[in-house]
Length: 119
Image (cartoon, rainbow, N blue to C red; front, side, top):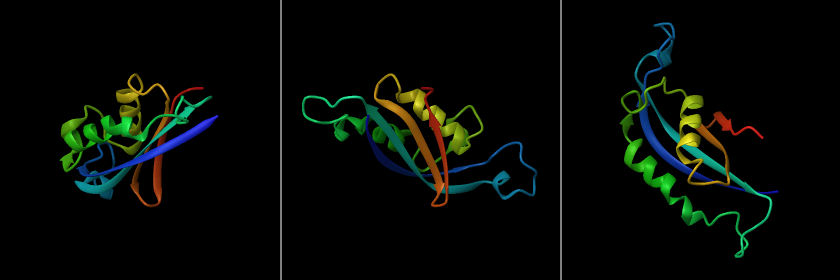
């Protein structure tokens, strides 16, 4: 199995609902997010790629136009946790990128949430 990944970055704010009022994430705060899309294929295309990285420009375009420098509570209809954002991005691109098998969202250098399609 061949696997590739590509990272995209954006900055945004959010408030996480349902937390105790004294929890810092219950207040508005922001992150410099890193989104990593993971693709796999059993065999390579005629060029020798799983997919041309340039074909992932649709992910960058969506992130730049819809998420970057936004308040995520205004964008999503769900509580904008890293886990929920990973699933939403997977669902957004799964039909357009058939090789997509996981989306990873990092809010800090030490934290990562991954949504992976069922095998």
